[in-house]
Amino acid sequence: MSGFIVGAYAAAPGELDLDPRAEDEWYRHLRAIPGVGGLELAWTGTLHPRGVERLAEVLDPAWGSVVTCIPGTGRTLATDPVFGLASDNTDGRRRAIDDLARVHAEVRRLQHERGDAAVLAVEIHSAPHSFEARSSTESFAASLSEVAAWPWGSARLMVEHCDAVVPAVSGRARLRAQKGFLSLADEIAAVAAANAAISAMQASTQTAAPASATSALRPAIGHALNWARSAIETRSVDGPAAHLAAMVSAGTPTAVMFSGVSPVETEYGKAFLDAHLPVAAPANGWARAAGHGPVTAAENDRRSGLEPTSLLTGDIVQSTLALAGPTGFAYVGVKVGASRTRLTHLDRLAPTLATLAALEHAALTG
Image (cartoon, rainbow, N blue to C red):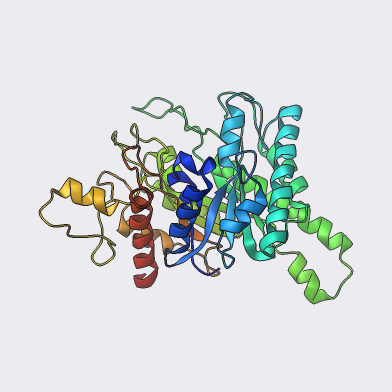
């Protein structure tokens, strides 16, 4: 792929749904950011409240974007706790598959509007929350096998790992996970089982030349890591690296999205909240904004978009990129929010730009 993925929806002001002019301005800013190869697009029951055609209008025609199903999944779980692709509740699993069918329909419409390469991946998840409902590797694998058989064009299904429930350990009580989906080991097992089933099905129906058969048997489903969510699960800056190494070792396409998290309360929310914090202190040379005159260090961080207490640092971004397998990552990007105190569009994008700058520096110097 060319360029980084930016999950700008996490920083978007609420006015965009109601004000087309404000939305046009927001997307003008996004299209002007150097190095962006596409956006992470949020599924909330639709990809855009005014239709896919409107979304196609504001996207850069050269972008290849990633659809994430986590916003819609989270909203549905609030009122339907057995909903999810990994649910052992038959009706709850079917409702999740039906919801993904609606995602599929809008992805195909966007590909029709902007070309097949307009969507390069769709991130799906192993809901439900294990504190609320039963889930299993077997149920998830069955769902994956079914939905991967749909025609997705150039888009690849990617299982994005969210923080799983961590058992109690000595000196620490069991943590109530924010997402509480399947463990990474269970997700890897489910993806492996689904990919094996898909390959067997393709092989049994393959009648073309051997070269085509080789292409058809490539893994259909991959894994995606959100740095913050793995740090939240493990309460460690080393956890994401361990998770990523396991994904790469599984031999399927792997992607990385960088979000930060803080062990203390910040203007983004409470400690270890999955609030998409920006990167912390800059390494030499990558900060987009530095030196704003006689201001405090805290104000300089704010203007630069940095969060000093974030566990995500420039050095960690660089060491994470170094974990890529021989074929590299399927895509790499940032997903960063904006606190309520950031009001203007450019101010809300400052944390995203700071984190993107760290990623660009790491990619150039790694």
